[in-house]
Image (cartoon, rainbow, N blue to C red; front, side, top):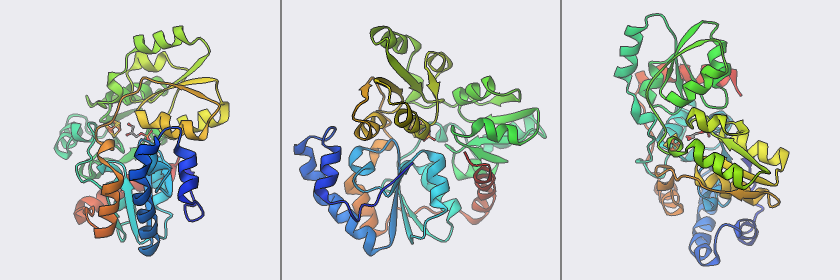
Length: 329
Ligand code: 13P
Ligand code: SF4
């Protein structure tokens, strides 16, 4: 997680930092918006939380906190701001709203979805609970509030094994990411019953492309997100959440690195680790990329796109998120 004090950062300082990944011609469009958003933030006592997959102009230009989905949830609980603008996808903004029912939570684009969140509904979870009576449901935070409301506890890729083992049972229903479920199964004795959801970004990576890159770059370190297929994870040196990837690079300073995940990750982490060479391929998340500076500005100025969750669903879903927060990372 990185926390920034943009009040002391001039526009020039921001550009100096992000110039390796943003050409000057593009910066001319971003700079006035960055200035206006940071001014508006102070006037409205707003905070901007951004996921690690947000573009560098959002991550380094306007975000107060940028992090993985677990840290975004935990940090949203600590803010004293009146308004939270969540630069990420819809389930992340919903999670922030569950934790902060009294605050205004805005998302710059209401259509920023997630293939995992849309792979399962509350009705599907009720059907699973009927099929496996008495087995607790662990839902990945990449789910709707309705699905969280039907679950016993949430988790993210940063704490999935810890959450599953915290229940003290020998079997759990783990939804909806089939590959994350597979990763958890490899790291615990608890029996995992999974669902067939996948992430459209991570399912595209193949073990062959990862192995070919290693052949061409024998000194490379490879980190895969646990949403990747199992043979991709086993071809990597390390698997971890997006913030675990950031920490790995900062701590180990490898000569060369491949982050097997969304494209903006490498751009954002490269800026803070100038001595590390980042090798791509990467895949874009079309949902994350619906968030732009223009939309951040509009939603903060108009206080539009407010997240609303019905009282009954919010009360039940909040319990699952709070149980996860108590377990932490
Ligand atoms: P993290 O929890 O690792 O940030 O991942 C969220 C996500 O959507 C990955 O695709
Ligand atoms: Fe969802 Fe995958 Fe995009 Fe993450 S990268 S928000 S899991 S579609």
